[in-house]
Length: 171
Length: 181
Image 1 (spheres, rainbow over the protein chains, first blue to last red):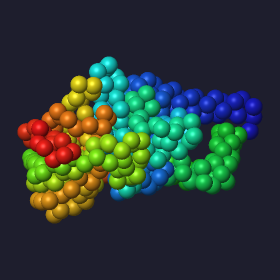
Image 2: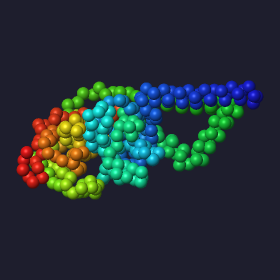
Image 3: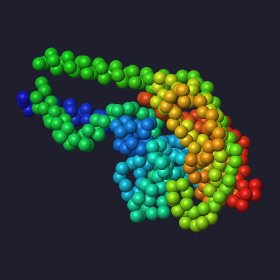
């Protein structure tokens, strides 16, 4: 292995990674979503979505319709929630709506989740500004890859080790 | 060693491309399958009661929030929506109305999940609404609502599609005392 070869290999790997990252962000711009691809982590939408499924999101400017599956974030909580809208009330000012959501597999609606943090006490609805995307498409099982990576950090290091091997040893 | 690497690389690249082409074909072909679903929801009776809590024990703070209890009948034939890419049908009955403060309101009264074509013909009588029917302003005076049946086709792979039936005629909500407005 010589320095030139190692540098060429690292350049190729970096170009590939950055190319993927740029396409992902460009897709995010096209769909108006920060993260147009998410992996389902909970079973609250079974049997439609199981853990490990990939969801394609978009965030069009039009009003949220009832029955749409929305990905939303409660202020103060990092993890977004993917549930279905079961109540919708539109205010006269365009863009403002009051929405209530519920997971298909849950017995109760999400008001308990909205009000979980003390700063959110009394929060009875979510609004379109809490919604980060709506589900347009679906790909089963392939997200288990990211779930394995988070559950077993050893796999992450093994993958990084594999990339390192390729960079240093590939001719 | 070299040729094993090359062979493994070629096999992986080809099979992954082939699998994704197949998934794409399934996803896009599902968009053009013709179907003729039909459905109708009708309300047999509406009763308005006042109360403080709803089914989920969410406290609405005062005692006189008006909850509407309805008895519905639902007829639908959604079997034509089942094709090779249908994982399940999420069917829900929606009440839609408008008020002076909020021009468009929609509330889900009842929902069900249909997983097989044989279960896709629905004929139900005497259904109570599964979820609380309460307006943002917590009163049902002077409101006319129509009901319709909506469905969401969840695919095995591909696009989520939605559809709905025609809306029924407007239903008026009685006062809590039982007087019909």
